[in-house]
Length: 265
Image (tube, rainbow, N blue to C red; front, side, top):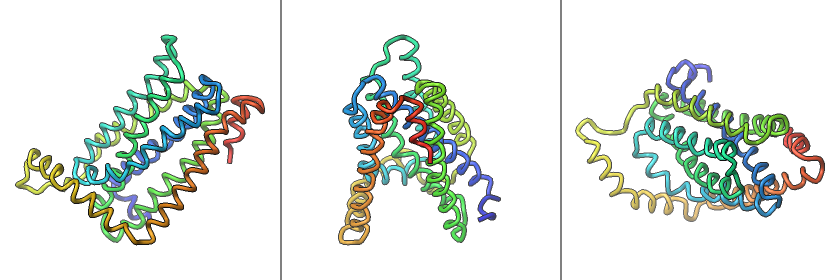
C-alpha cells in the first residue's frame, strides 16, 4: 500500500478524491435539510432523494464517454460546473429568491455531473499506477469514498445545526474549487495514439459509443452481477427512503440539532 503513495500523481488524485467526497457528503446533508425546511413536508425530501438518485441509474450511459475523453479536462470541468451550481443556493438566499424549487432544480444537475467524476477518477488509476499496484490503489480509493462519506455525513449534520444548511453550500463550493485546482495540476496520460488528432478522437468516440454500450450490457446479461445489481438497488432504495424521511422525523423531535445527532455514527 505504501508504494502506491510514492506516486505523486496518485497522491494528487487521492487527495482530490478525499476532498470531493467530503464536499459531496456535506452537500447532500445540507440539501436534504434545506429542502425539508423550505418545503415543510417529507414529500419534498422524498422528491429530492428521487432526483438525486435517479442520475445514478444512468451512470452506465456515461461510462463509454469517460473511457474516451481527456480525463483531466473532464475532472476539472465537472468540479468547476458543480461549484457554480452549488453557489446558486447561497446567491439565491442572499437575493431573497431561495425556494424549494430552486434547490430541487440544482440537485439533479449536480448529481448528473457526479456520474462522470467518480468513474473518471477510477479510469485514471490504470494509467498512473503499475499493474501490481492497481489493487492497492483501488482499495485506497474505496476507503476514501466509504470512510470519508460516513465521517462527513455525520459532520454535515453537526454543521447544519451550528451554522445552517446554506453555509454548507458555501463550504462545498470551496471544496470544488480546491479539487479543480488539484486536478488541473495533475498529469494523467492520454489514450490517444500519436497519429490520432482530437477530431479523429471525437469521431471515434461517437462511432463506437453504441457498440461499447451494447457490449457492456451483453457482458452483464446472465451473470451474477445482475443479481448483485438488483440487491444494490434494493439497499440503496432503503437507505434513500431513510434519508428522505430523516429531516421530517428530526423536525418532530427538536429540529436541526436532532438532525445532526441522528446523523452521528
